[in-house]
Image (cartoon, rainbow, N blue to C red; front, side, top):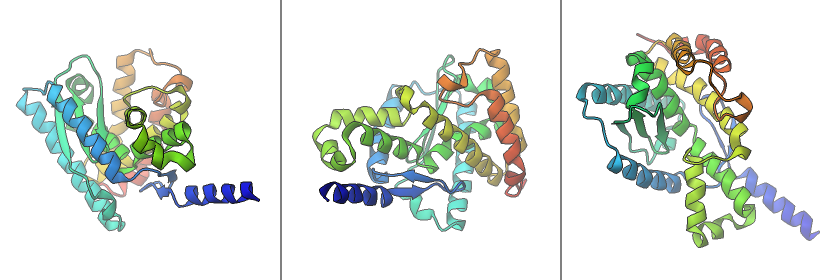
Length: 265
């Protein structure tokens, strides 16, 4: 009887700890408040920007900020039209370019904290390419992937019934889980989970860039350039946190008709 009560209690906790991802409608686990994870993200982002170094190229920096603001406004419009503006509470958008010609990367932390690395700009090639990456990275934040991954990590580490107490009593472990949740760590057990997030961000990002006035048909072209750059030297999809270039391009081409409904030049 006691086991049955405990099981029911746990299931109710899970049931009432679910959220829905915009655009895709997927249900996700949510055991951490957006306010909590946004605060941790803001602190980590401030440290990244402080150590930088930020790019001194004003033209490239302005490009990142211009595209970022256009995607931001598109997201805000989409969320308002769907009655979801409350989900953007606590967002304090920032767009920065870090001087690093070796790291091909860009990311968006919870709360709208975006960073591009200069090494990715030649692959972006132009404003359209930047919009492809920006839409994808911002989509991670809008889909609350960081919060979902942290919820998964906390449940795996502490167990559902003790998460609240454990977060307060073991802040170091909580911080480590947060770092993994926003992609600053590796965990083979979560690779499949991460790949599904990447695909979902591709889908959502296509919608957002289209609403921002960028042709979504340019998205596959960016990944074709990325595939050419890698020269086929990509880890097997099973051991990668990202879908293969071929899978990604095929999926994006399938979503373009939907995205075109939002596209206005």
